[in-house]
Every structure is written in structure tokens, then in C-alpha cells.
Length: 253
Length: 307
Image (tube, rainbow over all chains, first blue to last red; front, side, top):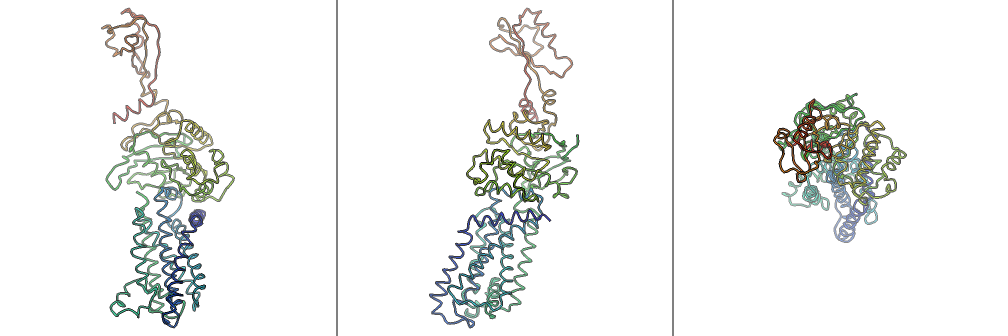
């Protein structure tokens, strides 16, 4: 195992976060804080409790998931796409590094960045709403698993993207609507019956509800199903990335 | 001399059916400087990209220090340094960090003093805290060389190292390359500049349309394939050549004041003695004699044209 290479890639990517701290940390924290202020404190005060918690507290897991998903995907996709775009990917490909080591370096850094953002958002949320975490270890487990899974997914997108437009398509056109329609700001029970059924086809519903259960011990979906869904998607991403990188799609000719 | 890189029947056909390499076989000797000469699209970059692991070969095999580049990729790649043709660098990084990053990729422990030495040797030490986008083109090219040397490779591939580099810097770069060879590194460089190959390469391999046309010592190639020209200056200008001299395919130059005669210096009979004898018999008076060796450039152009 080439540990020095993993370390080099990891810190090289973390260094990118340091150089772009405004975009990497401040931007998601500010935009999520605005949600807490508007929906949590201002509008939330006029909405009755949901699942026994105030509306402001209720939306914390959903907004946390929204940020984790979009940040993990964009960090990781950009992390591998940028060297492809500049051509500097040549040195990773020409180095004595296995596909696994490349993935660990890039995805590890991306997941770390998302984790940092997630923790800051939780701390920020505590300033605006009352925050109680019923199962902190489960919450941490889901936090790490989500960061890892969606960083892998983002890595896959970055590998397969040939231009900046393709890089943005999945996060903006697919993930963001799925999160907003996945119960981040409401419970599925509030929807008409037909849309409730449609919602069960939205994979993000399971993630948000899993996270919400770790916070409040209540959600629309059984926690076991949520965890299994997340682990299933993680496995699918591992297989996808392994196939793409071993065949050299998007990197080698 | 021991071979350090052995290429056997290497072929590459890209997805768009373009055949970039056709059955190339080439041995590269330890501690030599070999220049891969060829026009654009000849297959030079594809060849070195395959050896370095960036491009997947269609068929054939390559060994580096007797290790297979696919099966033993960790071993072979750790021996190789690559300076790419394009200035492929992350523009917002600092020089020292970026060079150190490459060393890490190659599985080597951080060694700031070695990086310092490399940067000093390449006149980049003053720029160690500069961002790459603040450097000139020549400096960026040197950063790429520093990165390629950061893990102390024994085989160095330089893909068009002089592209976009001014004359003074080119001379400096040649000196760096010669110094590296003297320190035990085998150098494989691709170049468009024949002058560069003539100046620093021990051997030359000419590639065109994916085929290896010739491989030889630079001086032997010039000697064996090059023609020599005898320039004869006359005392008095001539209007036409005497019929006795027609068989020599002479060219009249300089308004009849000079005659040139092309001959093969490696041949047993160059024809010079009989030409001079015949000239004497036709009454032509000689003022001066001069010989010129055709350059590697002439040979290269001729080879590529024939192919």
C-alpha cells in the first residue's frame, strides 16, 4: 500500500479547501444559516410542532442532509475533474498508485470536507433553534456514511464528466430537487396520498428520515430501512467507481 | 550496455480507429540519451504515455528494468519520471508544495532538503513560495522537470522539453539534461528540434505514422545516411559544364564560379579523385575546395518523406 501517495492526495485536496475557504466552508454555512433564520426562526414560529418538535428543529436534519449531499458530490466531483481539466491528472496516473489508493485519497478528503461543513452547520443551527440529538452515535455514523457515500458518487460523476456543464447536472438538476421533495422541510404524511406514494420512490426520503430519526427518535421511515438503503447505495457507488476507474473511463485512453 | 527499457511489438489503436503505434520494437540502453524524432502525430507521445501508464496499449509489451509495465506497474512507475509536453500544472499552488506533492505520489517520504537541491539546480529556489500562475512559461517547464525529478527516477521521459523555451533557456536545459545523464539517469526525449537531438542525444529514433523508421547513434546515422557535398570554387566562371563531367551530376552555383558534387562518404569509391582528374583534363582551374556534411535535419526530412 502506497500510504505516502494517499497522504499526498488527501492533503493536496484538503489544501484546495484551505485555498478556497470561502467557497468550501463559508458559502454552504451561510446559505444553510439563512434557511435556519427564515424557515426556522421567522416562518417556523408560525408553524405548529411536527413529530413533537418545533418546526425550526424539525428541518435541521433535512437541511443538514441537503448540505452534506450537495457538498460531498461537488467536492469530490470537482476534486477529480479539475486535474482532468488542467491535465495535471497525468501525474496521478503515471505514479505507482493503485485505483483504491486514488479513491481513498480523493474521496477521503472530500468526505472530510463535508464532515467539517456538517459539524459547523450543526453548531450554527444550535444558535437559531433548540437542538437535541437523541442518538448521537447513530447520528455521527449516518453523517460519516452519507459523506463517504455521496463523495464516492461525486467522484464517479467527476470521472465521467467531460465538461463543467456535465459536472453540475447531477447536483443541481437531480440531487437538489430530490432533497427538497424528500421531506427535508415537511413530513411525508403532510402530502396527499398519491404524492406520499411517489415520495417512497425518492431515495433521499430514506436518508433524511434516517437522520431525523437519529435526532428525534421519530420519522416517516423505519430506521433499519434507512440505514440499509444508505449502505446499499454506498455499495453501488463502490462497484461503479471500481468499474470506471479500472477500465480507465474518463482518465485513460 | 544493459537495456533499461525494452519495447516489444508495441501497438496502439485508439477508439476512433486511429493507429498511433504499429508494432514498435525498441531497446533503450542504461544511462543513454535517446531522442525520439518525428513530425506531429507520429506516435512519440503515445509511446511514452504507454510506458508511463497513462495510455493503455492495444498489444505488445514493455519492460522497465526487466519489470513489466502492467503487471509490475508499481516498480516500473517508481523508476520513471515524466515531463509532459503540455504545461499541465495546478495554477494556484505554490512551487515547493507542488513539487513535494509529486514526491509523495511516488511513495517517497517527504525530503525538503532534496526538493531544495532540485529547485536550486533548476534556478527555481527563489520562486519556491510563488504560485505557479505567477511563473513564466520557461519556469513552469522547469517546475515540471523538478516534479519529475522529485522522486529520484532512474529513467526520465521528456516530452518536447524545449517547446516554447527561448534559446538561452534551451541551452541551460540541455546542460541540465546532460548533468542528469552524468548522474546516472537514462533520458528519453521527444523533440521536433533536430538541433536538440544533434546537440545532446547519443542515439536517435525516427518515428513517423506510428512506425519506427531508424534507430542509430546520432553520429553514425549522420555518417551512414548523410551525404557529403564537395564544393569546388573555380578561378573563372563557366557557362556550361564540359561534357566529360556530365556523369558526376554536378550542380553549377554562384553564376558559374562554383560547382557542387554530392557523394557518399561511406562508399569505397567517392569519385572525388576521378572528378578532379577529369576537371584537370578539361582545363578547369580550381581556386578552393570545401566539403559539407548533410545534417540530421536533412536525413530526418528525407526519411519522413520516403515513409
